Amino acid sequence: MTDWDGRGLPPVAQARVERAAAGRLRTSLFSAREAATLRAVGLDPVGDVMGCVVEHIGWGGYGCGAYVGTGVGRYVFSPPTLTSGMGGFAGYAPYVDALYYGYEVALHRMLLEAQALGADGVVGVRWTQERLDGNQNREFVALGTAVRARGGHRPAHLFSTELAGQDVVKLMHGGWVPSGQVIGIAVAVRHDDYYTRRQVTSWTNVEVTGYSELVTFARADARNKFAQRAAKHGGDAAIVSDMKMNIWPVHQAENHLDHVAESVVIGTALAKFHQGAQAPTDALLMLPLGGTDRRSTKKQQGTK
Image (cartoon, rainbow, N blue to C red; front, side, top):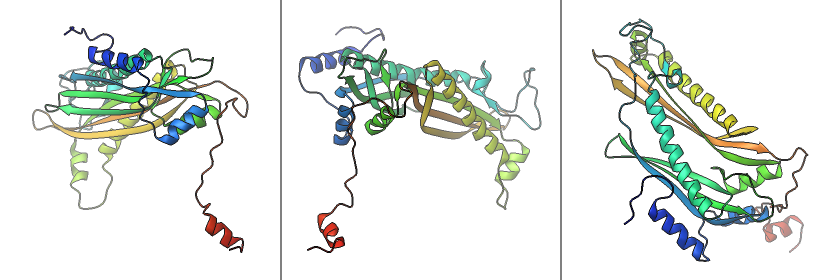
């Protein structure tokens, strides 16, 4: 068995790609409607592709929200919310870097499979993240269907999108093409101060302002990272397809309780290729067939 150094395709993935290239069978994760719609704009499926990585996530960085400021150990009564976007080790920045690594390596390996099949891009990417053996070992998986342009005009680089085939066709009709998949990740941490503890134990319906600030900061930081990465992709616009939020408590020393919020924003950067009102595509117009029962139509027209 050949040793693999982690670069390029794993040997088992390379063997699967070679079998697919040698045969005529082209596997796909598309529905029948997706496949037919994409073919109408000259994109043919050439095979399903996958990229995965298992990563050990150890130390996450500095996270206690009670100790902030320039001096270590300085406690403030009303602590601010720390975010990973502050840089250094604050707000679990190394943990966020580890998450980026997992997503990006899985995406890269999926695109390597697509490239080996002679594809121009991957459509309908599905993301999964599973925790293995507790919380520190995680598997990141990117799974989609590779497509190839039928005409003479080929994209300059491999693209990927989690959008369904029908949505990709609609974008192409409007003069847009997917440029690449974009992920924005942020973590925020906030110490449960006196006011927060009082609000969460209140007998009345009140806003927990500390937690509202926590989730708002986390989402805002993730959206900001998403926009920055979409711009680096050369995109003229971006579509957000999914926004996830995970919150958990952290028991720090000296009976300090913090809450951590993790926000992940996933979407697609888009590039404009046509400035007119209608893009020059050959896509067929697909109309819904619901409500066209012949018997009900004849009854409405007074015929038998």
